[in-house]
Length: 245
Ligand SMILES: [Zn+2]
Image (cartoon, rainbow, N blue to C red; front, side, top):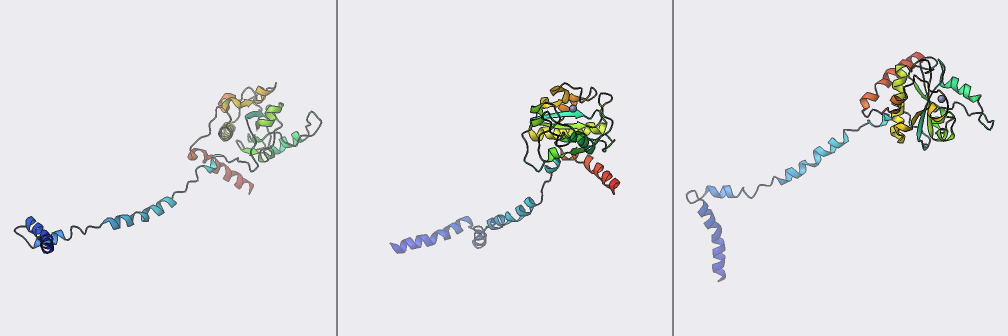
């Protein structure tokens, strides 16, 4: 029996070969044997790791960083408002306002620590037109001394533009600067447009003047595209640096 089975098994391939190729009995053997060989799976697997490595390391993006050039190093205060002021004078700077405010005293008779605002925006007289300068109150994330209203001094970012906007509107450069600053601060600290107010909205005063376009500034939005926020800085800075040298 064993012998018969062995014979049958041995004969099967022979029949298959013969069945497929009745007339060319020799060539088919060479066709069948390479068929089971196809093993192109190895190159396919090996090819994967090579291109992925370099592709992911190349595109580093620096797009987010410059969106807020005024990030303070100190721990951020819980800001809720932005309060806009004018100096009610034709000229001024952080230094000149600091000197004035240092002479002021609070209700208890204590001298102010110095300039009461967190930011000042120049008009070309005393400070470059449209230049935004932060003060020690912003850098150290201190309360302001500008609103004449405790809640707004504690939780309001005080921005003062040099100029008297009871007589004339801010310069174009000041408008561009204040809108950018307000837009960035609103986005960064989740301050709504309605919480961007003129000084006159929180205290009986004419500040920041009847020619100040309050609603336009309050609704300012930080431009999301890097390309549109970065050009003004390189053009402005070199001029100042060169002038100082
Ligand atoms: Zn004011």
